[in-house]
Image (cartoon, rainbow, N blue to C red; front, side):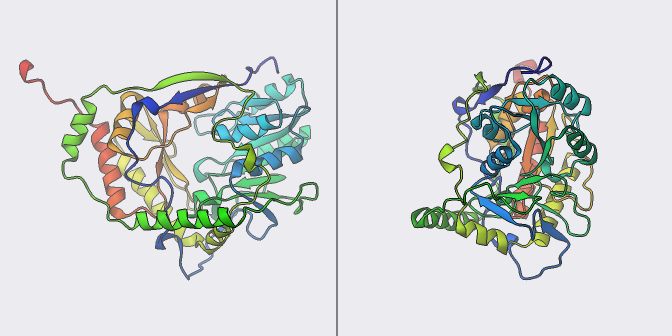
Length: 409
């Protein structure tokens, strides 16, 4: 372990005792017409489109092979961003590799000084650097690419948030020796992670194992069930104000926190899925999904979120503008007071994701974003009623004031 780095350990939030209800709106796009169509305008395309690729059940297992090919393991270390999902780190832990968490600025761009300090202090040779394009926004990869080239480090692009991009001006998946993406986060497939190699081949990797007929049929049934559930009318609650008053007036359970040593993988990582192919039906669904239609809907919903939070106290968007070539994964919103707002929003049923199971690092931004940065859906299958309800809930909770106490009036 380098002198300027901490032994890898994770801080974990346990929400079970909070008994949050199920979200009333889906975080990811369910099956439906919003993802498919006959027109092919060609403005947007998928990362790795036209390149040779391997199709896994999840991007985390594609990352495992990327790390392995790069030399991460007992004799090679990984530089990974301090702000991360736990499953971005699990594959390196599975390989026995040392993980060094590099600092980021408030726009989640890598801190070059942090990278250099960690690489210089590491006792093992650094074999790979993971560069993440957060929420669909491309990183400025040129300085990172130069850093890796100067030190003989393999650059791996993490496009799990950034599957679609401009066809005319591609900025994703063109810098790293390996590229990993998660198409199921953009297409309504049951699973799907891809690995693309700049060399175009994976000669040292064994073929992926097939899923089998039973797994394929179960996956198809789950996909059909999700599609049927998504067709149910979305019921808008008439008594939303009363519900929010009730939720916000009760100090519910806040869950618990713990720390875990970094030498084990998380519960979200299944070693049995290593080296296994994704579902064949998922591959077909992803191929049938229409990039332009998906991109335009996601951009429209992201813009609606930007308008909704403009001037809203207690929160601000991580990205205040949406560049014309960006296809967002989710809408990242920084909230000043996660307690009480995270708990109140979750108890009303707003779909929120956040990375609160994270490696402990010396990066103040990442440790702050762990609880304060909310990920809100902007996927293509959101119905106008759902989008309007989410905006209404967010505004009412953020602006909520407890009802006046009659005894004090």
